[in-house]
Length: 243
Image 1 (cartoon, rainbow, N blue to C red):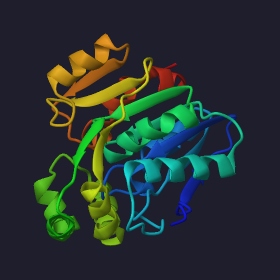
Image 2 (image 1 turned 30 degrees about the vertical axis):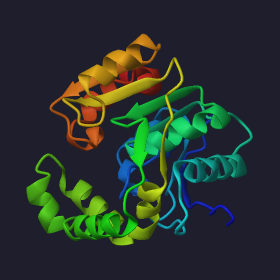
Image 3 (image 1 turned 90 degrees about the vertical axis):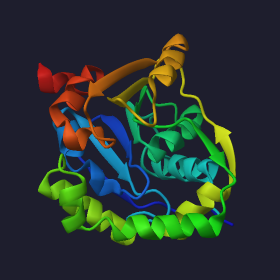
Image 4 (image 1 turned 180 degrees about the vertical axis):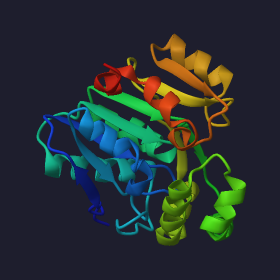
């Protein structure tokens, strides 16, 4: 099956390219506060909808590797330069780790992202779980379940859930598991505490030359709940904003 051609939201015309990869059940719109700030800091921003998300096609055979290949293709169609920075959140971080050896960003940033999957889940079970998760991602429910989110955050996440294809996501869960460790020199920004990057994970990453920065009390989508702290944790990316 041919790889899907991803939908890309492009902003800015700076000399440096920034690639943004959202998490599971999100969309390119998840970066609605981050992308304009990157544009202000001189980046041309490519925010991608991963397969089965936003306006990108479904992929009932999706794996982490297939998603990574689709990301590499989408970026290559829009620039011949290496991205100056690539930021991946959660599942998008896993995909970025798998893509980074080909994408070769100047700096890879992983936001509360796991670097391994167990895989082998029962597809029908996972479909049911994602269907239930979709039903709980309405604006009304999110206002209560995610009190640290702003109103627009809730609206963006509810829209993304409406467009989310559960079969695509279930394919990833049913596929064989794997591990995609980040390259030394990468940065991990995590919630503290984090279900996805534990204290033990953080220590192991740091011994491999990866910088880990925690934001106490942050939500899994760190920039939704702690935007200023998220920006402050990445002076390598947002230095001009703090100059």
